[in-house]
Length: 483
Image (cartoon, rainbow, N blue to C red; front, side):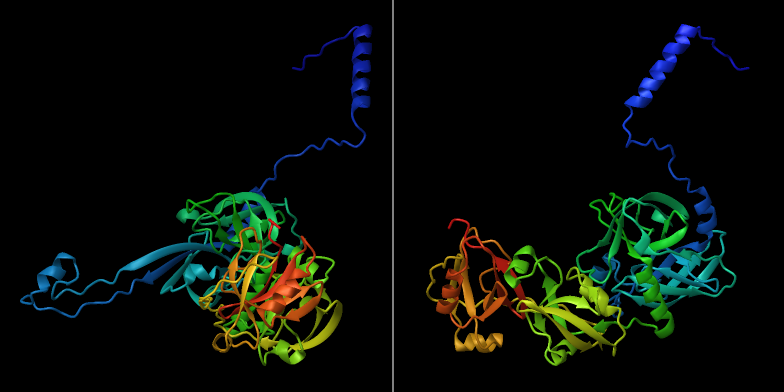
């Protein structure tokens, strides 16, 4: 039964006036939006059957001692530490177990997971949500993108829908389904925290950062948008405890699918390369090179005889475009180049000495075992300490022996650095050239370099091309703060 309340005419008039006043008081631009948190139940019901849990078994290989006689004086010593098996009984080889997640991308049994989930596996089992279990074959794995392609012998399987990470927006809801800590088919939800995130040693993947609860066992599982499409593969977390702390990272699904396609077709991933070492263009370097904005990839070394060298690319060039595609940062360049098929001709737009220049490069194939630059070698000792110049650097000339050792024609050794000098520079570095306002000056001797640096405007930054061990790069510095 509904209870009603009757108001007298005066009271009714007061209520009407108050209601009208409240309506007028509300700002015209404010809109009251009514809504609720998203309901993930339908997404889970439709997509969870295509999500699988992965159990990995790896035999622990260990060396075995040669059989010792019981009369051997060392027999009792080794027996106490469990190193001598009892005679006549076979020794059981220990095993390690690991769990992960994955998802089916085809109805005939192809599925994606992380490469680190199946690395070194002797046996891989895939468990479906309906309790079916299959042995899986690892078709291929790619460590650089941390993607592995597996195959199970089955047909008419559920599969996920593939989404477009480019359309994903920061703040958008996303969910993960996986096997955290061995708990199958667990769903967690959150939002996209950032896109195109660069992580150390992971420069080929523009990670999606989320605050979705991801824990050990979620690796290799799918990240869904609200339309039920996979937009990423959960791969990494930042944690001090080993568990969830609100920072999770997923491989964009377009990167994962490209890797999976190549693994299926060729069993490996082929990537392009042009043979350059690059670094980020900072605000100070942009100023030194005469650039209007901090974009592009600064070339600090060109591989002799490599594709870029043959095309005329030079150290100190700033690569701004690849086939009319803007290179917004140094991390974008390897991602663009590695996706290009070897043998393809591309046009690089480079900034050189204050103007743009187009160069045609034939992309080569990246070897499977590209190794990082060698560690810097220790600088040779000097008998006398030079006085600091106006930039706070104490410089000395290289001896002929040092030039031969470093394989340089000219260069000036940084012997010491005064307090207050800012920049990626340290004693033992060798100055190869000075770059200021787009002009490059070769470093021939300490006196000449000191003279060039003395003419730099007070407070302005200057770029130095440096040699550190076998690594060559460009660093920007500012004059001593005490000047």
